Length: 349
Image (cartoon, rainbow, N blue to C red):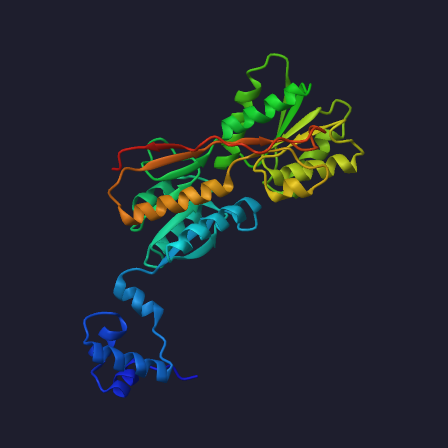
């Protein structure tokens, strides 16, 4: 199909190309000229070039959302929340998956070349190269995750230390004194934060035996591989804290293959409270880190930054909430209740 050009519209309407362009873009034109141009465009089936219009406006009406793994259910929940907020403001969402720190740097540099008007980034690893790229980014952005205190950027983050205290206190309250922690890679920000949070949580007790396993990834398969040798021994732990729900499901599968009863022989907890935690049997006790709330907060923060790039940088911390299911207790869980997010404002340099 041959594309109708604005030159053809102008010829049909009997006006100059400049007049037709002004009329179609809502600029100064007499009512008579505007009507002629609109009628000609409709008759010819003219469709404006969105890219060209974006270049004229200096805006793309697109926002980027870059995450480590778009298949992870946490990011799926975040994406839905972000999409809901930005679409209401007339923006489309451009999704990008970054598995490595170098990919995150590339995304910041590439999308900053006019492809999007702003970016929400959830990096798995925060490197000096990434911080340098962010500092030089020509577009507004928001980071989902924890950054060094020296990084003066808009940030939305979860509260991993409190999340770990919630699960450890829950397990101790149910009589578990031998608690293992199966983490993901510790060269990642989530791996470091959740490891440190677990250590701080168990160090508050004097009578706990603890063990640590670093799985190869934050996946079901890695959780299974990390749990199997840990559980297939006479002195196995009585509880396992998984660094996320995917690892937690892997632990449940390993326990089932070894003939262990959950929670009678082994209690298991996850982190993130994804839909996966609800559908497995037994249901996986987990800590809700507010994926949807973080997504909404990041989207609103980015829109505010686009509207006013001079305002002070902010850090919003979304508090966690424990959701008890059958992997630790037969009791019916209470409704999820979450405190209000903590919003900190800093000077924007």
